[in-house]
Amino acid sequence: MRRTLEVGAVVLACLAVVTPASALEPDGPHLAHAQRNAEIWAAEDVEIDAKLASLEELFGKKPNIIYILTDDIGWGELGWQGGGKHRGTPSEELDAMAFDGMRFWSAYAEPSCTPTRIAINTGRHPVRTGLLTVLWPGQVDGLSAEEVTTAELLSEVGYSTAMWGKWHLGDLPEHAPENQGYDYAYYGLFNGAPDFWQASYEDQSGTFPFADFPGNDAYLDGAGIDLSVAGYVGRKGEGRTPIEGAPGILAPERQEAFENESISQITKFVQDHAQDDNPFFVYWASYALQLAASQEFSDDPSVDKNNRQASFMALHNKHVRQLLDTLKEEGIAENTLVVWMSDNGPMYAFWPTAGYTLLQGAKGDVLEGGIRVPAMAWWPGMIEPMQDPMDVIHVTDLFTTAARIGGALDKIPNDRITDGVDQTSLLLNGEGHGRRNFIAHYSGEVLGAFRYDDFKIHIKEGHGGLPGMDFFNIMRDPGEKYGALYPGLWVVQPMQQLLGMHMGRVEQFPHRSPMTPEEARLKAQSH
Image (cartoon, rainbow, N blue to C red; front, top):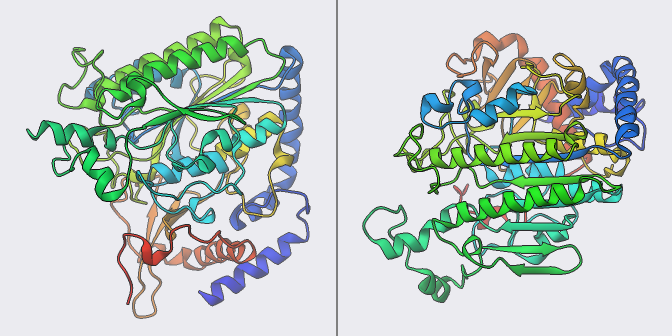
């Protein structure tokens, strides 16, 4: 590893000579890639700036940006990837959105929910932020105030910012969205599991999956964890108040009530702000798809009756259509980028209530099934329809792309690594114009795999002086069925160099210290 770091440091030192001091600081492999393509990208950027300027002149303001992040929907789950009604999870409206714009077949998230929420909000791998674990009720960890969010960047350049949905980045006020750049936030604190804890305690029939939960009162008495407030309404500078009624009380019915209230508020927000002088940014972290069923769609003939998530897919499908229709009705669709993306692969723990993927692995894995997710972008008049590019994107890219489109690139701090790559050229120019050729796949603080172009390396323990890796051609073999060391011997040194460049940047810009020390985390301890 020391030799690898030295190689990376030499390469980075050479690149630093031609890197403007005021520029954001990308990861090492991205820095090298940008330098190789500097002339081509500079010419593209002139054209992109002209397109965006023309749009701004037409509407009198920067584009609106809406990011929809869903939960545990696997690669292949939507109809446009072979799922949909054929798997009992109808997604015709989501499919229509996908075909009206750009369908990403090589989109990647982090392996689980809190990490991806860090990445989309900060443009950084969670390992850099000090928040390394999925959060549970009662934890005091959360998104550091030192991190800069998409909402904070866009607020600085005049955007109205709002979020709805599953926050899952810390329970305490200092971690809350109204203190992380959002003017308004209607948010749940936790993931979907606590909605079923008390129900399991009361039911005792095995219908609900957490039979040993002692009940809310005993949990508060014994563990000191209060589950009486499931979510808040927050306003920047004004604090927060508990959500009232069914959307704010933990129960299996809460998620549908929360989603129905959310889409009602989101459409009203769009209507109220459509003609404002300033643009808006919406982050909708939908509860689709958690453990809950949708009562509205539970008897739909196209829905798999034994998969509660299937009915919730139908509900979410309806809500996304409501949003897109509202943008059209208000005459602002052409000035609004909408990106839809899942936060990780499927969670099979409560099968048959689960998403699904034909790829190996699932939520929590750095296998393709855990991190490769469905995603699409919709922007009428700006993104040509019926596109299915092979270009690779990562959830961190949404941060940097929003900054570019919103005119806030210069607001990104340069005292840290920004992993997100500006993908505006891919959106506006189409296939072949993506600007990412490397992804580091972390599991907590452990670098478990990385992808470079069409090649992916799984990092493992070496033996006998041989490198510790399995090698895959991920275009040919997305299921990761035929990986081995020897077919990849030719990439050992190139991959070592990439790893050195990546780790060399960590030496330049160290990670934040973990909020919870390693010895206090539930993980195997080394002795």
